[in-house]
Length: 215
Image (tube, rainbow, N blue to C red):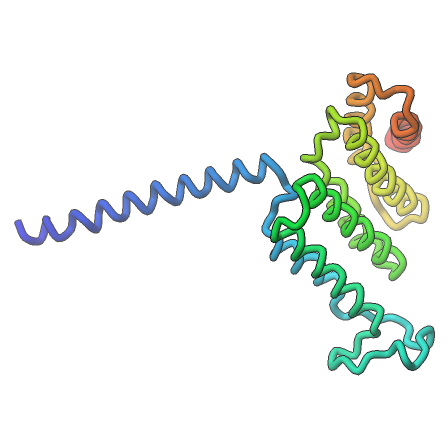
């Protein structure tokens, strides 16, 4: 009898653990669906800052005073970028910005990284960063709110044009993957009555370009 009684609490604990794991998994899934932009800020920072590691900028273009004595040997401009990025992320993580603003800032940082990677000739990473810039605005209310729609259209344009440039230059990329995305942005514009706007016009003309390439 004694052995059985001893086993019970352990069994119960195991069941409780399993139940709580399931709840945690469900909660994580809910969060992911709710807003991609609310991903852990630490992970986001690490992901973004990784883009700055191993920077190889031409040192000749910097005057002596802009060179840093930093042990990493990174030019001062890169360190300043890194510091600015960390500040924005810390402010976002500590609620210094409203949710909407946080989403905006996250999107803007990814867009800047996309531009930066493109300058370095790292086109695949540039495309990835631009895609993340779009995804960051997924939860911004762009399907209903006109200002958010304009922002979403703007980052979509940058992403799509980046891929189209890659295709044109023979660096790879597929127009098929873009078609559904642009089509959905155009459809939302029609549904919400945004047809008179520049954002809608740009999306429509992009859709024509993408359709021409993917047909």
